[in-house]
Amino acid sequence: MTFAKGWLYFLNSNSNQFKKATMKKAVILFSTLFLLFTAKAQEAHFGVKGGINASSLHFDGNTSYDSKIGLHAGLLAHIHASKIWAIQPEVFYSSEGAKTRVGNSEVKINLNYINVPVLLQYMFDNGVRLEGGPQIGFLVNAKTKTGSSSVDNNNFKSTAFSIPLGVGYLTTDGLGFDARYVFGLSNINKNSNPTIQSNVFQFGIFYQFSDTKTHRH
Image (cartoon, rainbow, N blue to C red; front, side):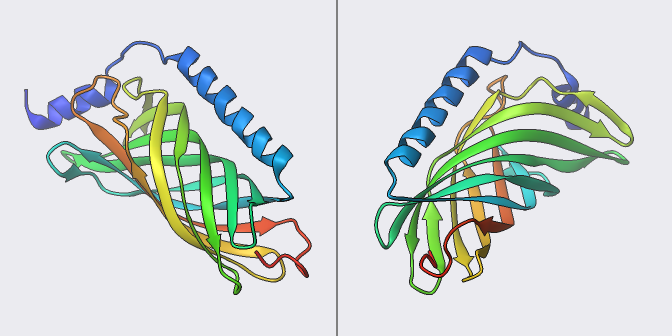
């Protein structure tokens, strides 16, 4: 079997159903953590966010496929722990994946996730923030698109674990910008081999609802 045929077989073959029980437990866990942080926080400011993704898939043997452009959008809660430290849980929809060429055809792997990062932020007085923390992603659907034809792809796990690291900036008007790189940690290939990890660069715009006169952070 040639590499191209093997690749197409992987993209289009079927596997077992997603592990729904695991996903439900993870949703409950992260929802509980989010509520606990919000309930105990002295200052919690909510907001909305959205932006663009440049995502790629990394395979065993230092093989990566071309980046695919997507979008993300969702909600955030900025929770002050002190003057310079904050916790920021987020929930957002994210369109990820990668693309490559097989023969004369462009093949896109479209992976759509609900991502839940919990970020620790260090805040400077000028509005700049350094941020990083764990993230779990829940796969909504996965499709392989070859040319104009799109089919379901059941070869990807229902959850993905990663570490986002980045920087943000909040203006005095509540409008902000952030850029982060999401390092994939887990193997998202349900068939185990080859190991596949998802990496994503994100640039976003957010609006934080708060008293901007007293809370630049």
